[in-house]
Length: 130
Image 1 (cartoon, rainbow, N blue to C red):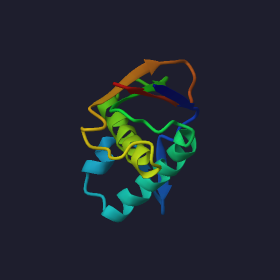
Image 2: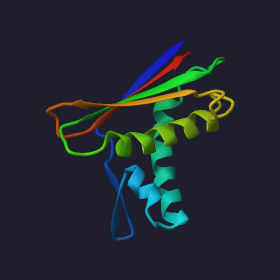
Image 3: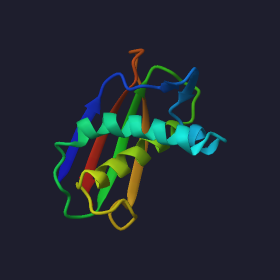
């Protein structure tokens, strides 16, 4: 079984208070408060829930793949990809599409950078039973 969805014009950051927080793994690993990280992740999960709601309930372990489309260069794909995959895994569990987001149910996460001319980044999520 396979499911895919594309989210156009994904946010690259959220403004919380007067500060801009970029959606990268560095945001999670820097010394930001748990409160700020929780707000960021909740905003991401709300966006993702809309796009993953129609995914089937997976009976077998899945591979999560994201294709990150951007015209920007010079960034680490693991910084951009990690935070999105983390949020996707959490959402899939919270909306009942997988029983748990452990390696038992998600043994593979893949993220790829795909250069495009459009200035608006987008994200394609591909979930495949393995």
